[in-house]
Length: 123
Image (cartoon, rainbow, N blue to C red; front, side, top):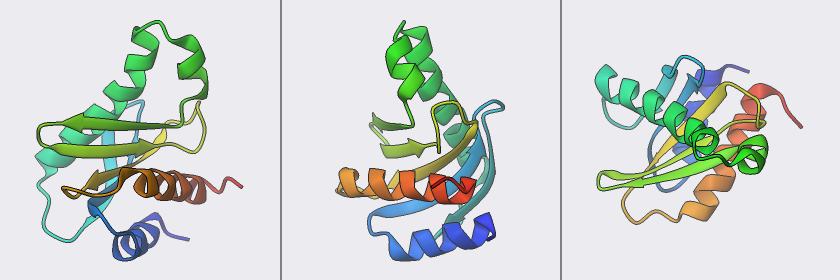
């Protein structure tokens, strides 16, 4: 299984997303992505940084219980919604899905979490 192939399939089969990316939380870098339109590297860099910041925020806010179990985060902003999911609470691998305006986030959250687990080989 190639991560790129899984992301392309996810993009085609999952309604409500503009872009899906695979990254590393420890570095804040996006390593691979798939989208329906061209996506500049700068946008991917910001996405990776935002994913790392969202998970780090749980620790910074003094929420050790939440941080110890958090495998997903939904980030809302003026520019849209993003779903970040990792296969386990201690994993550095992260899947990022950028939602289309008006997308239903609960199914997108479950789908993104499922892809994160699949890419990691988790049950």
